[in-house]
Length: 383
Image (cartoon, rainbow, N blue to C red):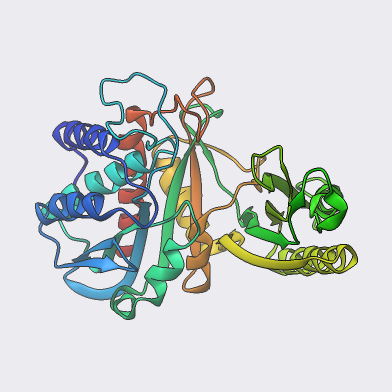
């Protein structure tokens, strides 16, 4: 397969910076998807699917002979965080920014597309998938549920994420679990308001809220290497209204539940729900529970890990599995139920700003080696 050219790299860097200027949030990536589709059209894919699972885009490159389908995934969405850094390509949208590097992941696949446009694989197909709504955990499921996904169903699936805090040239990769399962739990309590001078005339959720928070966080514990590891984090709480004259009658609590496996997470959810039910009953309150930002555990299969290891060795990366598994979640885990899948984490620099930090910016120097890695993957499987 042809090599990545200096022009490919320069154009992909310029395009990454353009994407960075115009971020869109999960489920709102319409303009980003159009930008991606326009970029991919220039490479002449054999098939271009748009609107997958909402705003997803997939470009298909077909080899001369039949063979397996290799899917490589990037993400479309940005974050609802104000960018405080000052690169020349700073976000132009107040309160929104590409502070996780999805712009760089898209640019990496765009570089791969440029090479595939000049030379198809010898066998099989390559699918470059640009997935919506990774940050909320909704995008992969929506893409897979789209009836057109059957047209691009892969035999192997790959993805990468940049990883600040690790040296450039380091690749964190291993078989088995790499990211935790997690779910966002929203709890609402409803009682009855009263005048602040006579709180006994109402039913306040204050006691329920104050007792439930330590009960829930107490469900977490253990080291990340422990199969029973769990983490419960209170992320938001609201009691009543901002008034001095009203004893509260409603409360809201946001909690993130996290565990090493989907089964362990289901167990934590059941216990948490029982805590809420019993607490509400004791306090004379009604309670409601809903979930969002749900992520399956992400597990790497042996075959695609082997393919990645060979590609990374060819490109001179230093392999390291010691940080695994990570506490944070990743929507790519959903693809593991569809095909053998693997995700690798490429070092972005030991002193680089962290993911989701307001001054984070994707390191452009990572685009070329990441693209070359995926080209080696394609060559390994389809040549």
